[in-house]
Amino acid sequence: MSNTHETPVATGLAERMPGWLFPRLSGLHIVALFIALLLTGLLLIPVAQVIFVAFQNPATGALTLQNFVDFFGTSLFRESFWNSFYVSAMSVVVATAIALPLAYITTRFHFSGSILIQSLGFIPLIMPPFVGAVAMQLIFGRNGTVNLLLGERFGINIPFMEGLNGVILVQSIHYFPFILINLSASLRNIDRSMEEAAQNLGSSGMRLFRKIVFPLAMPGYVAGAALVFIKVFDDLGTPLLLNVNNMLAPQAYLRISGVGISDPMGYVISVILVAFSILSLWASFLVMRGKDYATVQKGGGGMAKRDLKPAEKVAAYGVVIFILLVVLSPHIGLALLSFGTIWSFAPLPDAYTLQNYVTMWAGSKTFIVNTVLYAGIAATLDVILGTAIAYIVIRTKIFGRKGLDYLATAALAVPGVVLGIGYLRTFHAIDVPLIGKPLASWWVIIAMALMIRRLPYALRACMAALQQVSLALEEAAESLGATKRRTIQKVVVPLMTGGILAGFVTSFATAAVELSATIMLVSSNNDAPLAYGIYLFMQTPSGRGAGAALGIVAVIVVAIGTIASQIIIERDKKLKASGDVQ
Image (cartoon, rainbow, N blue to C red; front, side, top):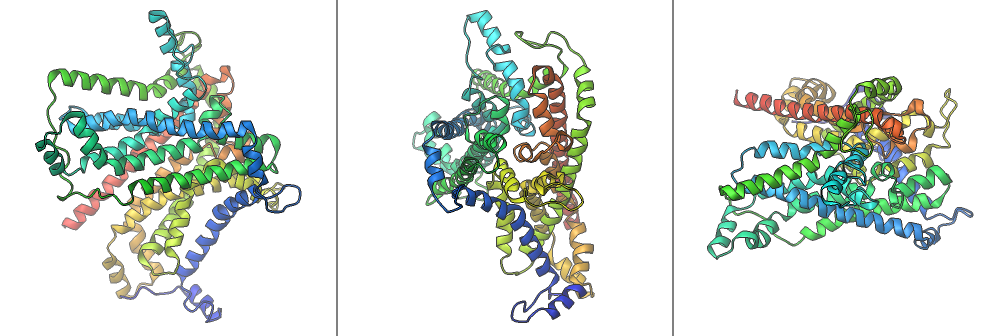
């Protein structure tokens, strides 16, 4: 069936266009062009501005490499560069040490509670890392719970949270689920026959794991490790809250906010951040290239599970419980801090109260209202754009449609601090009519930044939903005389409702706790969202209780969003499955 019906407006516009320039301009062509222009203006141009200024002589405007020479010629910047690389690499190592035992134990053995353990292992993702950073200081810091107990019992003090160690610990605990999720999936898909063949040849224990099991699970591990590296390298909030400024992302923020928008070093650092994000993805591709991880049997069969001996079971449960206590410590600490009165030089707060929540509510109504507004606008635009892009990519033959997909997804490779700096540079000279302030200082730009940052999440959800909608249903509607526009409105979108709603919830929940981009764009506290409010509260010891209470609100928002999106997705799958059966 033909799918080239055009709306009356689009048809009229096409008739007025030169035939050689727009030989076939349909409504979908106009939508694709509009989205391309929007993404160009809100993503490509700001990032291009950052790159251009990084290579520009601030005095003459000529292109030069001198800014990069100055960067690597400054000891602070060299130190920040190596610190960022070191923290990212060590976070991958520590995250691996946390994720690998959980993934292997729950997939390799008959282990009671494996589903619960995997679920608890994913919980750290619902807490933004900067939110739990202060709580982890109170637990693992020099005078925190663990070191006070160690000092009392054994007379030792371990620098868990000193300098870069603190950033590594916080980031590892927050991002290790990326490795856990991907590695667990790979372990479940390993071809059982390969493991059995190795065992028949005498391989067992750690040798079997090192030579057969882990190499076969490498695709999942590398995918998770690359995500951890990129996320840690780009993160801004955690180093700032831990007062670790000798890293790249904090230096970019401090140079632009302190020295000024014309300072070239902030842009040089931004280019390096983007380059490393891309290089990390490229390196992960190179590791996998030329290697065969295919399974022989359908689904791989999964690893052969075995029962644990009593001593092994005790040891396994001990390891799992210890890891879960460590990874859930930020949530425990944040909850204690939010209800605590004074928590200083003591293993636990001196007393408990609800006053922190009263203070939080009185001082953060504006933050919460702003967050609902900004995240709501961002999520709504995300699902609209995501639905449109998904339809154009999957259902049409429009030239450049794949490029539209790549452009929308490219936001994943752009750190939030880089996008914020790009917006400041691009929009600071554009005045908003009737508002009397530059576009870069208007609250709408915060919503636009959140929209661009979370668009890839909504797009993936919408694409997954559209792929489950049969093309035959559209063809049937068109055969009955429906236009393409009416078919999309009355048939396609209703059938995509589950995926669209899941994309909205995911975008909303994650946009609500975004700090890296918003911290660059907040011009006054009246325009600040929830994440920025937490950052302000945490700057003073007296405000940490209220900040923790606001952090609990943030965690609840993300948790509800995560659970709701999963429920929506599963319910949608069941409805589609029952429809297929009928």
